[in-house]
Image (cartoon, rainbow, N blue to C red; front, top):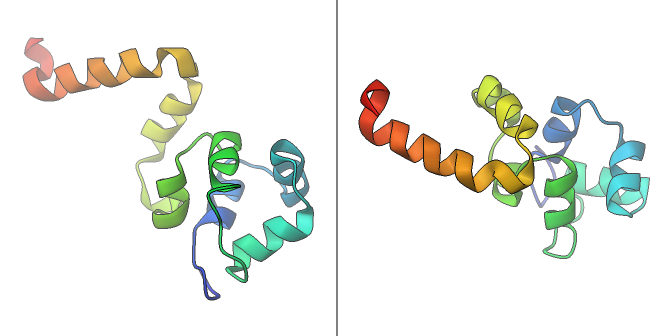
Length: 104
């Protein structure tokens, strides 16, 4: 992270094996914008952050606050493979497991 507006966009993009060009195309912005956001030269705004997070299959908060390389990547990869419509059910299952362990 560097610049006035630090974030982990570059790390997330690389974690998802995307080029700046691919991410720019996925969110409908310029490659230059991706570069400015990655360096922190420009702030990631609420206009772009949700679309970028969706394209990278993560959350806006994770892009701003967490380097994917510091997170349990197996969980992130499993989560990324769960269809969006099924994610609420997956969360509920994880909550049950957290409460009961293998007894549930």
